[in-house]
Image 1: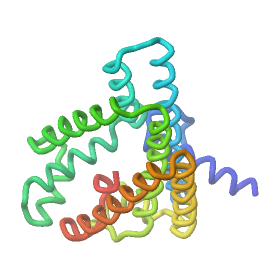
Image 2 (image 1 turned 90 degrees about the vertical axis):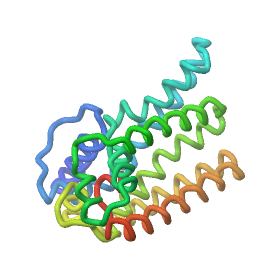
Image 3 (image 1 turned 30 degrees about the vertical axis):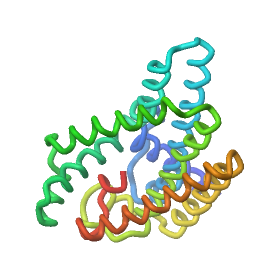
Length: 237
C-alpha cells in the first residue's frame, strides 16, 4: 500500500511538472512512476477552471472593465500551463497549413520555428476566444471551467487509446509507460463527472458544450489518423 501511494504521488508530481508551471517537488521520470501520470492530467484543468472563476469574481469585486476581465480569463490557462497546449495548437496549424505529405507534416510538428500559419492561428484564436469570454456571464463561465477538466480527460483517454503517429516523442513515452486500463477508466469517469456537472449547472448550455466536445473529439481522431497516421503530443495537446 505504501509503495502504491508513493507511485501515485510521483505520478501526480510528473503530471503537474509536465502539464503546468505549478511548482511541485521533483520526481524521477521512471516507467513505474509514469504509469498513472495521465490519470492526474485533468486535475491541472481543475486548477485552471478554479483560477478562472476566482479571477472573474475578483475582477467584479474590483469593478474592472470588460477588457481587463477578459484579458485575465484568456491568459490564465496559458500562464498556468506555460503555453504547452498553445504550442501544440500552433505546431499543428503549421503542419496542416503546409498541405504537404504525412512525413513532411510530422517533421513540421518537430520544427521549433514558428511559421505564418501558426501565428495567424494563434492571433485568430485569441481574438475569437477573447470575444467569446467577454460575452460570458458567471453562470456559463462555471460550465466553461468544467470544460478545462473535460478536455484534459479526453486528451488523456486518447493518448492511452489511439495509435501513435511515431514511436518517439512525449506522447509515445506517456502512452508506452501508462497503465492504459487505469487511465481509460479514470479519464472516462472524470469526463462523465465533468459532463454531469455541466448539465446540473445549466442543462441546455451543458448539453451544447458536451455536444461540441464530442464533435471536436471525433474530428481530432479523424484528422489525426488521416493527416498524420496517429496522434502526437502536439495533436493531443
